[in-house]
Image (cartoon, rainbow, N blue to C red; front, side, top):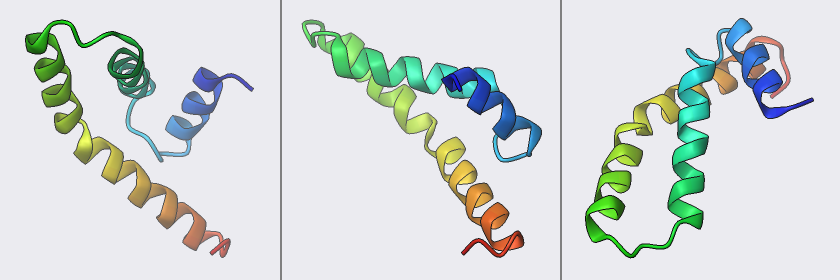
Length: 74
């Protein structure tokens, strides 16, 4: 199962709000991990974008926990 298939499934289960937003977060992670930090402005911009995504990540984690509790999986 591909990453996008997993995201689509999570969206259908109302665990994530948007597949596209999670693809953007993944792309951001890849840029922050693999691009060389030659330009401080770009690095700062990417860090600020990452910080702005924290509520989305926290909400998704909460939804995962709620999903698992509801199904008596934890």
